Amino acid sequence: MASALRVGIVVGSRTDIGAAEKAAAVLTELAVESETRVISAHRAPELLGRWVASFDERGVGAVIAIAGLAAHLPGVVASQTTVPVIGVPMPGGVSDGLDALLAIVQMPKGVPVATVGVGNGENAGLLAATILAVSDPALRRRLAARRAAQAEAIAADPANEGL
Image (cartoon, rainbow, N blue to C red):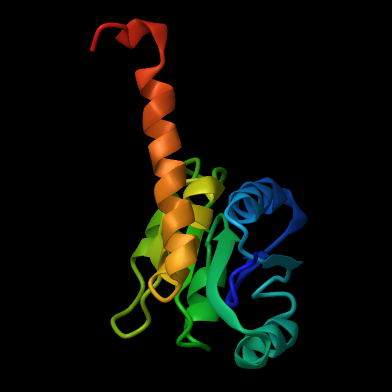
């Protein structure tokens, strides 16, 4: 059963779609509906604005914005909505993703963007689900079950025998 709230995933270019696919896979595993769009904050700002403006009517409860280089996309989305935005900086550029990480994490006061590690679409999906789980007890239980399964897999590793 899907969560009533959904997650919007946006990438600035098709080159970053892999991180979006990882986020979407986690959300699918947790039965959270998501959508993925490819919209450049610089090359299609009006289209991005229309997408953001539709969040309330479509039930978008969290956004994952994935960008590299100058990485303006997460901040531009956050500047247009009060829906929580999670930025995923992508590797590449002058310092292999550090520039994107700093661009996303150093948002001006009043326009927050949560940020995960460089290229970490999976954690972005988990964080989006965690945000939605605040008001969705069933999703909270699915997240807890996923964490328990992770711990069981580690405990079952032959290297941990006898612990």
